[in-house]
Length: 331
Image (cartoon, rainbow, N blue to C red; front, side):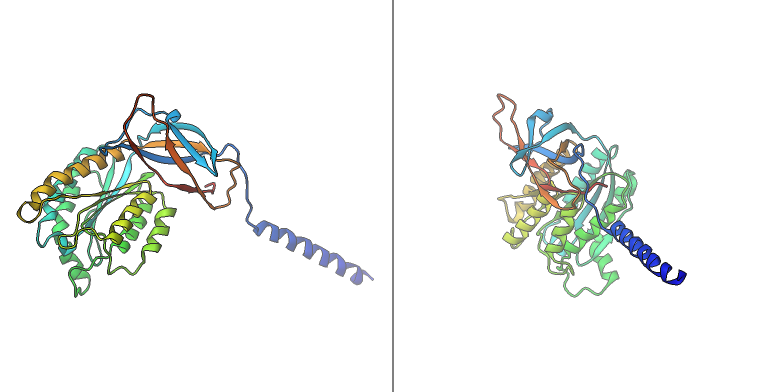
């Protein structure tokens, strides 16, 4: 009798425990009406210069046609980890010595920002070469810049390279994203210097890079020259522009109408302007905190639109750089 009585009891206990264990494994969605999302926003005028002195009243953020509450807006003063990603393919060094021009501008850019940020220097052609460790020491970083000319030789030592003009741009960008994950600062930036943006070597496709950039917390700035023979390819330029805009950054496409013997002189004038504008943007970005409507940590992508409410009397045209959405997840 006791045996028959215990069997239904034990089965009921087993079902109850299994039910509760299953519930514990189910992902849950929680709401938080006080949760705020952080959004980095850069504001530039028609000359490409950063605009200062704005307040939260000068910004609007819209989600699903609903105006969101902006809690605060301030210039971000936190240090950044900046990874310099330099295209060392032969087209950057063969006909015109682009490397010398960029080395000078990169050194000036680093010197102007050593007190605030840390840097890591990498180069690539058909594969990636690390030229320095993370540092804010001028001598260490200058030594890394001196190695820009040797990127091709370093790649040859890694593997046999049949075509010196091959460029693994997407793989190099994915390497940079991975490297930035271990950097010490919350602000993470890729500074890409290239002459084309065309990729004929990477194992990864552009769509893979696109997804990684969207999910990352990295901002990308790009300085790009036209190719010495082909100019800007429509697809290459579009991809570079999208890479920057996805992250709230900006692509600077350097254009000069001078060719042949005076082509390099035109670059010497235009390249410094791009680095000056880029430095101004990096150090004058606004950090906006806003409250989403009916926030649920569902892990989904939520599209937003940021707008600028111009101060009265200001007639200049402005451009906003920011990520066009956020992933709803509470960390």
